[in-house]
Image (cartoon, rainbow, N blue to C red):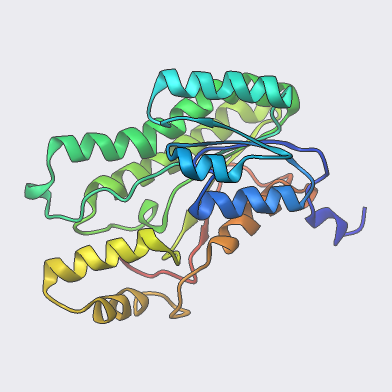
Length: 259
């Protein structure tokens, strides 16, 4: 196999992506479809899910933090795909922007439930199938999973946990041929990041544009990354060229130096 060919996933991969109907997840789904994969997605938004499914894309309406929903998701995925080669735990929420004394226990719990427990549930239900296929588990963390993030403590804590989950899975399942990695996006273009910037701007009494520039000043390249950048990393890790990458926290961030 040539080096160039090794950078493309093999056709026919059986892929499950949580929160795969919009945002970063939609770009990841589209990338795998372009590579000739069969994809089963979940999403909590029924309209987005219905718009996304069709042809090689099947889907399940599911809350990734729900054990019952996640069990049903994997049951349906197995019926549709017959096995799993790649599982991407992509579901996540931004959580509150607040000082620690203003973060409610309810907001803390919700953020960790979706971001960290959701990744655990995906790993819990997929590990045996990934052992059979010697497959790949990808957990979506964040630059906030390697850096402190003031006023975003629930989010950062959950994303540090996701890195620990991925690295521990790699150590546990590696001897059985399974790879596990975390991807750490930086400041990603899109509505979620716009919401984060707006909340921080309102909290500090500055304009959206000023706060956006403050965020970008912390990035070496002085620009946001695109959802497609994250999808490209997922595809690379799923290709033969990525077959010896495991137990890693891989930043796709443009060089975020601080948050």
